[in-house]
Length: 266
Length: 287
Image (cartoon, rainbow over all chains, first blue to last red; front, side, top):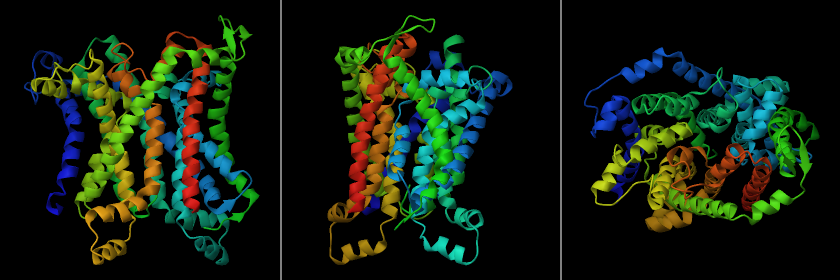
C-alpha cells in the first residue's frame, strides 16, 4: 500500500487540473473553432484573445481595479486585526467571548443578504464606485477571519516572551513591532493569504458596489458575456488571467503556509 | 494559556469593532427596517409587523429552496470531508513534492467564483466541454442545462472540485502537528494502519476538522455565484438555492419586504447552526 501512496494525491491533482486545462485550451482557440470543432488542443493556435485583453482598457483596467481593492482590503484587515487578535489572545476583558462570537457571525452573513443595503449605504456616504468601497465592504468577512487566524498563532507564542521583553525595558509598541510581529510572521502571512483570497474571489458585493471606475475584472467578464454575444475564447482568456495573481500569491506564501501548518493552527 | 484580566484591552479591539460594526449593523438595520414595512415606492412606507415573516415561513417556495439547500450542503460535506482527509493522509510529509502538492491543490481556492462557474460551464457543456462530451461518449445521456439530475451532479462536482482542497490543507496541517513520537509508540505496540488512524490521527484532527466543517457549512450554505453562473438556478428551479432565490426576490422582483424577512430568517438559521458548533468546539477545548 505504501508504494502506491502517491497515486491518491496525483489523481486528485489531475482532477483539479482538468477544468483549468480546458479553460486554457479554449483561450488559445478562435470562437469559430470552439463552436465548430471538438479537439483536445487548439488546432489553429491564436493569441488574439490575450492581445485583445492587454490592449483594450476596459479589460485591463478590470484587473487593475480588482488588484487595487484586494490589496487595500488585505492591508486594512491585517493591520486592524493585529492588535485585536493580541487582545483576544492575551487578556480577559469585559464581553470578550461575546465579542469574538459576534465578529465570527459576520463571517457567516450571506453576502446576498447585504447586497442591497450595502449599495444604499455606500451610495449615501459617497463612496459608490470607488476602490475604497469594495475594500471596506470586504472587511465585513475578512477582519473576523484575520482576527480568528492571528489569535490562533498568537496563542501559540508563550506569554514569557512578552514578560521578558518588558523586563528588558521594551515599551509595548517597541516590543510589538520589533519582537512580536517578527515572531508571528508566518501567521501574518497566512492571514494575509486568506484575506487576499476571499477578497479576490468575491464578486457579488464587488459588483454591487461598482459601476465603471472601480469595476472588477470578474464583473467585466459577465457583462461582456451578455452584451458582446458569446465570445467564448475571449472569456476563457480573461478567466485564465484571473488565475495568475492567485497562483503568484500561493507561490510566494507557500513556505509561510507550510510554517503556519507546522504550528498546527490555521 | 492563562490570561490576565485587563479591561483596557478594549482599546486594541476598537478599530475592528468600528469597521465591522459599520459594515454589519447599518445594513442589518436597513434589512430589519424593510422586513416590517410595505412600500409602493417614493420612500413611502407602511407598517406591516410580522406579516412578511409569516408569509416567508409559510411559503412553499421558501421550503423548497431550503430543502434544496440542506440537500446540497449535506451532499458536499459528505463527499468533501472524507475525501479531503483521505488525500491529506496520503500526501508526502517532507521533500520537494510537498510544496508542489500545496501550490497545485490551493489553485482552485483562488479563482474568482464566477470564473469557477464559467469554467465548469464550458467544461461540462455536452457539445463543447470535455466532461460533457466524455460522459455522453460513455453512453450516458447527460445535459446539465436540461436534466435536473445532471445539473445537480455538475453543481456538486463543481463544489467538490472547488473546495475539497480547503479540507485537505486544514487536515494536512493537523496531521503535521502530530509529533513523531506518537507514531513510533504505535509502531512499537504493533498497531495497524487502521488503528493508527482511528486512535491517533483522527482524535488529533478533531480541532481542524471542526474548523473545516464549520467553514464548509457556512460557505456552502451561502453559495450564490458558482451555481448562478453554471446553471442560473435551473433547469426550472431545481438548483435554486437560498441565496439565488433571495437575489431573485430582492433584485429581480424588487419585493423588498419579503426579501428582507427571508434574509433575516436565512441569517438566523446560519447563525443558529454555527452557534451550536461553536459552543461544542469551545466545550471540547476546555476539556
